[in-house]
Length: 249
Ligand code: PEP
Image (tube, rainbow, N blue to C red; front, side, top):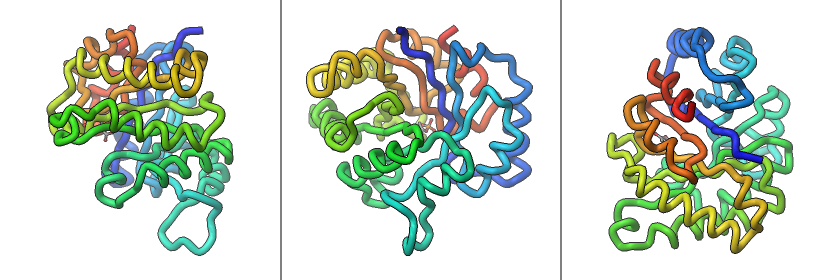
């Protein structure tokens, strides 16, 4: 079975109630391919999740931007996977480079978070990606393989994981990876999955690209054989997100 195109919108730490409602209205009015063709998931900040979930069209879904690594309890400031389940939030983004870099989330910690969220029935968009320094040192594939390995060591079922390749140097910088650069890393990640997990997981897991995707560059990126969709930051707050949803059609 083919891999269904996946488009995620990461709203990061942005928005007011009014702004969030405006974005949802724009999405609700958009004419896009059916859910059978493109899976769309938007990720508002925690505080807006219930509002967005209640007003968003039913063929689009919501994701949290993070969740705690284990069962909730005395972890001030954290939100648990159980709470997301309680609110009916089906997805979570884990291992985003901003959290890895700014909050020191290690590969192992991200692997534990992915495993715990999955164990609670939440689907995961798991992010990997190299810094500019690592790319220039020629270690891109080693870095993303290590990040993926830390996840693979903790999970046995990849059905509910979407792997997001997000080169750190391309996030929020306007410097998008070229279609060839994205394809090369996606190909290597799929090969890694084949050699280290299974041929079946490699063939069925969606590997999406993130890093300065916009309405102008999405079509060519979407045309790459191993690019199964996008995780979009800045452009997911704008009307051009609709063009990105349509990129593969
Ligand atoms: C992101 O935050 O996941 C991202 C890809 O951001 P941007 O599209 O703004 O580069």
